[in-house]
Image (tube, rainbow, N blue to C red):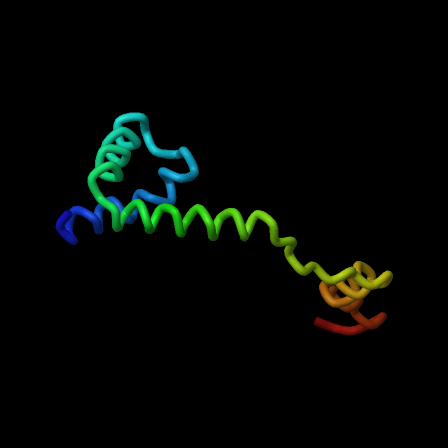
Length: 86
């Protein structure tokens, strides 16, 4: 296949692997994949990466007990002093 054709389809490989292409676009992509070993290899790599990422758990730190009170203290405006003029 030509690089121009493959470039067009390489942008569709992610949505194709996720099943989010329209039926017509998916059929065209499948037809291209039958003819193009390079794009099949790229699709296999994308699928492997997606599989690995699904197995990862994001590192989310445990919030400290007083996190919310510290956030509120930062965002609440300071009360004006009694008798202060504007």
